Image (cartoon, rainbow, N blue to C red; front, side, top):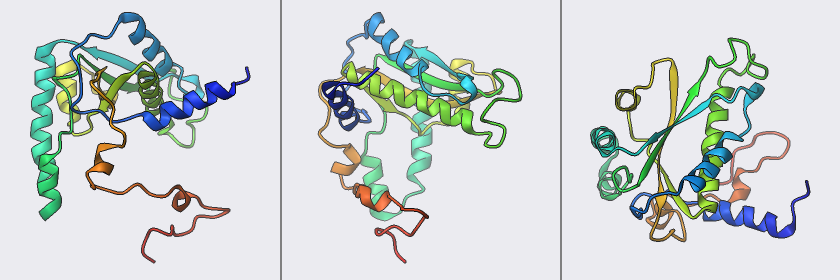
Length: 220
């Protein structure tokens, strides 16, 4: 199947317009057909040995979200203590989640035992199943953006909070907790870039030819 020029441009537009959404969620529910398309796109991510190790736990209940939000608040306070001086002040001013505001939460997990102990492509690099599950997150994120849905990845959470709130067994790895919903608007640039938390690296500084070399933007 050949990709047309217009289709190619739409893919790049979606990639560059993707944002980590925290504070712009609308309570508008996500139609079932839209959600199914997004989850189907996630389910078509590349996976090592075609093991498809991911699962998606959909979170709609307010009480469950409140448990997860309490876990975030505790972890966020813990995280703030790790920054110094001006960064600590700036950190405490950032909104880093939309757990209660987003109409839907999605917890993406990885079953590392799916399809048995020996998996094609994971015999040497065992963590490939985890990488596959992250690919599912990226597929979900881009499909959601194509549907004009915002997604926010809440990484400031201890796994124990999600295990307790969502009844996730210990043998199942937790990959991501995502806040998903329609938004009032998408920001032109990533918020942390706009606020000056970190500048965007020039792509040329990330490209190495032949062998790895020290990037131009790092100290010798």
